[in-house]
Length: 386
Image (cartoon, rainbow, N blue to C red):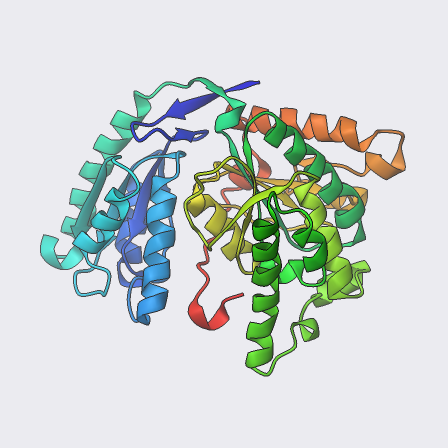
């Protein structure tokens, strides 16, 4: 199977062709927004960090932002700094250069001489990037070059027995075709860790998966907290989910039936094929961002109750097994799997249909989050980790 993608000089493949305008820190966000607004076709990527963080959180911020710029969906980027923040120009550029050779420019407000001069200089650079990006043409790419991030949020029981199960079937199909699927949300594997342990491609990978989940739960216990006091969320409970274990067993249906080939860290670059597990937060925006920073060109996001979450860099497909949610919140939802139990449509047929829809999105079809210009951004931090 093929899709029309953008081949980058670093070997990556994109399904979008973004020119990113990124503030180097929150203090320069206003200038970056003005530049993005001034140059049609550029993409503003919000960054709430870049300064006033501890060393671990600073490193994590840098890892995620450099990974998002390195994502195949990005042609190039302009970083707009202030000048006195913790993450300086060379730090940004060095981190990015370790991952990609794509064009990246950096300017700072204090060096350029104020807001107006910064916006004028930034607009000039952004216009050049956009003109160069527009010369890129889509070309045939094999589906084996696709990395699919899998996410869920606002779940209800239909998520587990319909939407997640259909997505799992699609994931199996993608893996069989040589592609890559990534499951994450470690807290939402608590209670299902013994199931996951049996699915490692080797006993060592299975044990690593199990240990990752148990360590996550232990972090809460060490802090004197019980994750079950907050997960399932009030919305999950209102939808009919009663326990974390019930939610977790439904959540892992997204991974289908294939063996896990590895366990990787939050936002870590995805270099292997097959089904991977990324150790990430259950906070769906920060988890979505991590998979995109790792290289996922597209995210399949299941939701029973509905959510408008989107991302500046990658299309986020909203999939629901709740037909009422699909019709009631139709301007947010992309794919309805409720036929798996409301009609005689099989999980297999829906899994194949979803894969075809994913390829349509890869070829340029906009998802609802893109049509609505929804761009959510969050980076997990040390004190909220897991």
